[in-house]
Image (cartoon, rainbow, N blue to C red; front, side, top):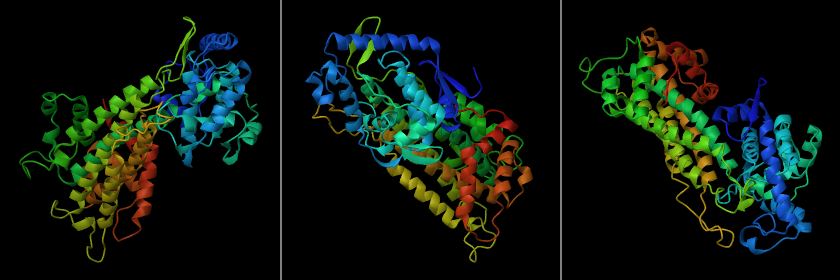
Length: 512
C-alpha cells in the first residue's frame, strides 16, 4: 500500500483510517476486487428499470410517495429532484474534517456492492476526497430516520455541480469548486440519489471523530488525576491491583494500572495511615469512575467498527439472489444510543475533574494556599478558573440528556419513529470540547499546586506531563489573564502531546 493512502474495500475500515483521511489528508483508493460487486449490483438495477419492476426508490417515489410508480424516462429527474428537495439543512456547517469523514464513510458503504451506483458516481466522491473538494454541509436538519437525508443531500449537491464547497481554503459554488479541482460533475440515474443519501454516515462521521478524541481524553484524565493525587499527597493503596481483581471490570482494572504506571517513583504520594486513612472519592474512586467511562467508550468503539463497514442503504440489493429488499438498515438507532452513551461517559470525566479542581483550590479540603495563589486577597489565583470549570460541567449536564429518547414522526407518519442520532453525535462533540477544557484547567491547577512543593519528587509519568505544561505556561505568581493559559493547554490537548510524552516514559496507557 502507498504511504498516506487508505484502501477502501467496504469491510476493513478502521477508526484510525477515518482520522487519517479526514484530518491528515490521506488519499483513498478503491480495492479492485470490490468493483466487480459494484458493477453487478448496478446491472441488476438497470434490469429492474428495463423490466419496469416495482422497487422502492428505483421505480417509485420516496417515503409517503412510495406508492407512486415512476417511468423509466423520469428516473433521472426523480433522483435529481430527490437531492434538491432533501437539501434542507440549517445552521453552522460541519468542519472540513467531518465533511471528509462523511464522504469517506459513504464511499465505504457504496463499495460493498449492495447499493447499485455506477463506478463513475463512486469515483466522483473518491476524487472529491483526494483533491480536497469539501461540501458545505449544515449541521442541523437530520432526524437520523432514513439515515441522514438532509445533510447527505448537501454533500451530493456538489457532486451535481450545485450547492457550495470549500476548496483550498476558499468558499465556492459547487460548480466552481469542482471546476477548479478538475472534477466533472455527474448526472444521477436510477437509484443513485437514494443510494447516496440514505444512511447513517453523518452521525457516524461525527461520532467516530469524537470517539477518537475521547480515547485520548480518557488517558489524559488519568494523567491529570495523577498530578492532582501528588499535589494532594494522595493515598495509592486504593489503586492496588488486588482491590480491582475482586471487582474485575476491565476499565476499572486498567485505570488503576495506569495510575500506578504514571505515579511510579513518586515521593509525593502516601500510604493509608501516613497522613490520613482514606481520600475523598474523587481520588480514591478514580479507577471505578474513570473505568466506567472507559468501558462505555469501548462499547461505542465496537459499535462504530460495525457501522463504518456496514450497508445502511435502502433498498438493499442482493445481486446473487436478484432481489432488492426495502428494509430499515438506514435507521440511526443502533448508533444513537451509543453516541448518547458516549456523551454521558465524557461528561463524567469533566464532572470528576472539576471536583478535583475544587479540592485543589479550596483550603478547607487541602493544605494548599487558598485558590493556589501565594498572595491571596490582592490576587485571586485560581478562584475563577474553578468557576469556569463548574460552568462547563453544568452545561454538560444539560447536553448529556439523551437525544435518542425523543422521536417525532415524519413523512406523513410513514417514518413514525426516528433516532435523533445525529443530534446525539453533535452533543457528544460539544461535551468533548467542554471536558477537554475542564481537564486543561485541572492540569494547570495541579501543576500550580505541585509548585508549592517540589516537582522533582513527581513520578516519572506525571513529571513528563508537568514538563510539557510548564514549557507552555509558567507558574502563576501574580494574577494574569488565565484564559490565554487555558487555550495553550487546550491546544496541546488537541495535539495529544501530553499523552504521547507520558507514554514514552511509562509505556502505553490502556483503556481496555
